[in-house]
View 1 (spheres, rainbow, N blue to C red):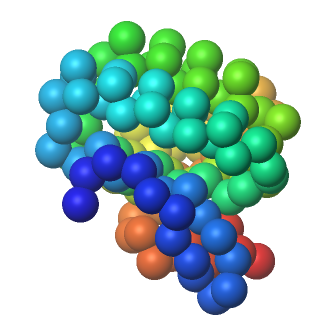
View 2: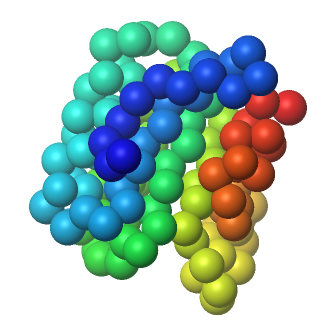
View 3: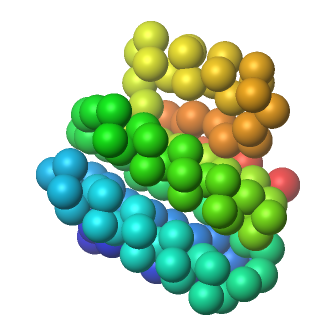
Length: 117
C-alpha cells in the first residue's frame, strides 16, 4: 500500500515509505508528509523507501536530498528498494562517496533484514 507507516521487523521499528505506482506529484507530497512525520516523532529510526516503478526525475531527487538533510540526525540507517540495473550501481557508488548510509536492495525483505542488523 502506497504511503508511509511504521512497521516492525524482528522487534525493531522502521519508517516504511512506499512510492510504488505514484506520480511525481504524489511522490513529492508523500515525501513531505513522511519527512514531517519523522520530525514529529523526533527519535532515531530506521528508514525504508520502496521506489519500485518510480522514475527519479530531478524534482524527486532534489526533494529526497533535502528530506535527507533535515532528517539526517534522526536516521540510523536507510535502505531503498526498486532501484535496479545501472542505476543501482550508481546509487550505491554515490552513497559510498558521499558517506550516506543508504543502500539499495532487490527486495523489501532483504532491505528490512539489513536495516535491523
